[in-house]
Amino acid sequence: MTVTTKVPAEPADSVDPAGPGGSDRLPTRSSGIRPRSKLRQRLSRLDGAVSPYAYISPFFILFAIVGLFPLLYTLWVSLHQWNLIGGQGAYVGMKNFADVLGQPFFWNALRNTLSIFVLSSVPQVIIALLIAGALDSGLRARTFWRMSVLLPYVIAPVAVVLIFNDLFGDKFGLINQVLGYVGIDPIQWHKDTLASHVAIATMVNFRWTGYNALIFLAAMQTIPRDYYEAALIDGAGRVRTFFSITIPQLRATIIFVVITSTIGGLQIFDEPRMFDQYGQGGADRQWQTLTIYLYNIGWTQKNFGRAAGIAWLLFLIIIVFALVNFVVTKRIASKESR
Amino acid sequence: MTAPTLVPVRAPQPAPSRRRLTRNAIRRSQASPIAYTFLIVVLLASVFPLWWSFVIGSKDATAINSGSVSLLPGGNFLANARTVIDTLPFWKALANSIIVSSAVSLVVVLLSTMAGFAFAKLRFRGKGVLLVFVIATMAVPTQLGIVPLFIVMSKLGWIGSLGAVIVPSLVNAFGVFWMTQYLKEALPDELIEAARVDGASIFRIFWNIALPAARPGAAMLGLFTFIATWTNFFWPFIVLDPGNPTLPVALQQLQARYYVDYSLVLAGVVLAALPLILVFAVAGRQLVSGIMQGAVKG
Image (cartoon, rainbow over all chains, first blue to last red; front, side, top):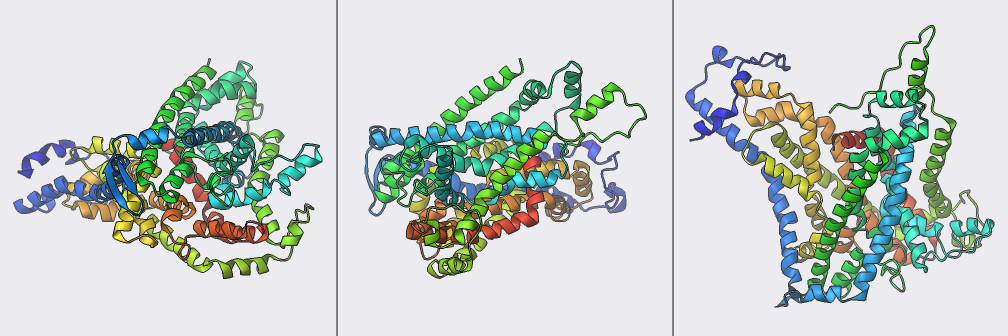
């Protein structure tokens, strides 16, 4: 039974490995040293055929329970009337989706989410590239500099938002005071829509820019140095080589960073939720994001059917934007090379 | 892929050619003052918000609301910290954060190492498809599942308990991917073939060969999982009660209670941030190299 399935799994060359293979302790030619019984061989083959599944199954079983099942069950819930306390109600088909799409607050939340996302990801990628460039330039004490850009990463978003809330205070906040010194009127960070988005995006950028800079730095170090040498001999300056060599060579990494920040950024919750003490996304929902909206519908209004609908819409939006960003980033990064 | 090795510095030559000079100019020479200036600005931007939270956290309400700006700390930090600890279930939140983050990292590392070992080094039917599946699930947003997860947790009667926070976090597709990549390089195929031929069971190979080889990668994964779990807010906020929070959930209560008195709020922030700042002080170097290795592999 298992005997036949296992035969091709052991290539002939593995019986007589020519290379060193680090097998100094283990005799490789077992047949001459320790003859094995038929039963033992069979057991060993069975082991080889079955064990792999034993090693991957804990992950997949757990994934099925807390990953895959909720995913499908969300769809089921979204097709029903469903109350947080009352539980499952009547089947309503696509009504929850239609209701969500008919609400101005949904579109407002979508706009806010996208605005915060753009304000956080675009400057973040640009500054991270610049930091990576600086880190890659033969610094003294380079570990110190690398660690210094990563420090914000270990501060929880909830802590970051509490600190920045104070800095962005409408009345006595440090930022408004400093702006006052240079003659700029105080900005209403917690009232004005765009200003609130800038403040929230700043918190995201604070935490993630250094992290992404290290990813870019690692990719920069794999670029062959000959490219720079050739460019320098051709008379290209540092700035020129940065745009003509570094950026195009980092294309894959930039795409990776943009996609991951799309998936994370469109789900943003902590920062806007804690931006004021009410957690509704502002008096006029100026900074209410899709996930806050989902939370409010599900846990404040106790309408689970509709919340599940929002969850699926959020999923679709994330997929669409991940694809759009993939195409756009690819295009931008390859244009730089020309 | 091996870690990117830098071009070694050449021995100085008596009469360096122009070519050699330009090479050094690009690579291992000194960074320009502009790079240092820029990085100092970045350093200040990284550190200042933390310093500021200590400055405010060490004052009292009247000093903050007086409208004058000072970048020096006051003398009230311990008093503020005591108020925070007395009004919040602070020690409980700290203990909960430690329990949740440790349990999640341990299990994630174990499951990921097992699955990574099978994906990297064993042959079995359906391996390719399953690995693609794992990678695809990394893109699925966690928010998608919260509604049914909450329904399940309330049916189980787990709402408010740490289990409701821990169990959904145990599945980490990134961890499986990471350990697969790590073990592909760290463990030579010949070694496993030789051990198999010698009659070692898969379990023995896993235990005596793969686990020791996986240790550095597993430690890195554990560290990142620990930080991610520690800083996680959304799901714990939904399922935990105010009386039994993790640290981020406790910080949220602090804001709801004292939003006018920022000296107390930011003293709480300092207290809550300290544990991970300690982790950073000890393992910051490992974090840096972990991110950089992951970038090259991923």
